[in-house]
Length: 407
Image (cartoon, rainbow, N blue to C red):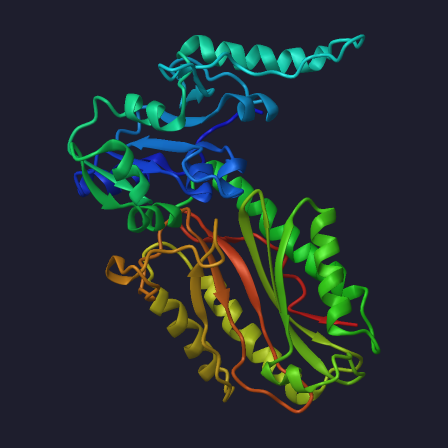
C-alpha cells in the first residue's frame, strides 16, 4: 500500500498561517486518514493514542504518520520516499526496565513450515521504514520527538495531545480548521468523490430496479446495502417515503410513488443521491411536482459556478420554479459532501452545527438538494445530485439522465 496525504495542503496552509498555527496534530481516525491516507484500524477499534498525524502549516514540509510497527507490517505499507509528502515513524513496545523500544515483531514460519515469500516483501518495507527512523517504545514518545522543534500554537482534536506534550505549546481546536480545509477537495479527493458519487447512484438505481409492487421498504434497504457492497462501498442509509411511512404496512403499492435519499461511501468519501420512484403509472399530481423539481435543478445546473453563495443556489432554483408557473415549495439547498454527508464549516466556527452561507469555490463538491415540500396521497418527490465546482462552472458527479425512476 502506497500512502499519500488526501487533504488539500494549499488550503490547509492558508487556514493555518492566517491563524498563526504551526501544525495540525491529529488523533481521530477520520482525521488521520485524511491527513495521511492511512486508516488507523487500532484507533477505530477504541485504542486512543495508538496513532497520530502531524500536518505542518508549511505545505512544503512532509506530513508525519505515527503508527505501530506491527500494524504497518500487517497492512503492507510501503516505506516512505525520502523527501516525499509523507514520513512514517513506527513504535514497537517498551523493552526492559529502561523503556527502550523492543525489537520489531513479524510473523514467522511454523516448525517444519516454509517461509512466505510475499510476506518477506512486507517485512522488507517495514524494515526499510525503521532504517529511516529509529523505532520508538510507544506512540507518545514518537509524537514528542517529532514535535520537539515546534514552537508557538498547534491545533489538535483531542485533549490527549496536550496531556502528552505538556505546557510548552499553545493549543487550539483543530475541528474548525479541518472543516474549512475539507470543503476544497484535493485532486485525489476529487477522484474518490467521482467514484463514490457514481457508485452510490448506481447502487441505488440497481436496488430500485429489483423492486416492484409487493416488495417492501426493507427489501429495498437490503438490496441497496448489497448493491453498495458489490461496488466496494459501505452503505449508510436509504431513506424513503415520508414520515408517515411508520404508519404504513411497509409494502410498495401499485400507483404509489415515494422519494429515496441514498447515501454510502467509498474509501471514506460519500455519495448522496435522491430521486422519485413511481410504482406503475405515474400520478399526474406527483409528476407535476417532479417537473417543478426538474425545473429548479436545471436552472441551478446552468448557473452553478465559483463566486455564488449557497443562498444564490436557493434563489436561482426558486425563481426558476416561480417563473415557470409552478406553485410548488422546493428548498433548493446546497451542502458540501466529502468525508461526511455534510462536510462543511460551521457559521462563526461554532462547535455545533450552524448552517453558513458559504462562498462557492472551485474544487468544492456540493449536493444540490431539491426535495418537494408537499405530500400527496399518492406520494412525494425528491431530486438530488452531486456537483464538482470547476473553475468556470460545474460538472455532475453522478448520472442525471433520469430524474425519476419507474418500476
